[in-house]
Image (cartoon, rainbow, N blue to C red; front, side, top):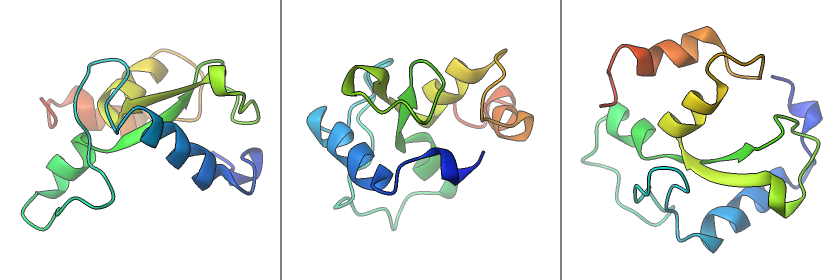
Length: 102
């Protein structure tokens, strides 16, 4: 995935989208971690599972219209990309295929 496909203010755009849904996954409803949450007692797997990301519905990182951006947890995001030619690698998908995040 090339960061050049994202706008310079992508982090701000993504954060605003996450804050608008109070850091809850649009797909499964899981409460994800907020930047202010204490993560010191969580394992790396737990942190990854509860990370909220912003998915591009049309799979085009250049299209940052609000209606194209969907806040989802890492697991749901990877499942959106399963079977598609997108910007998620098979290695990233295998993290979830091995039930590491059930």
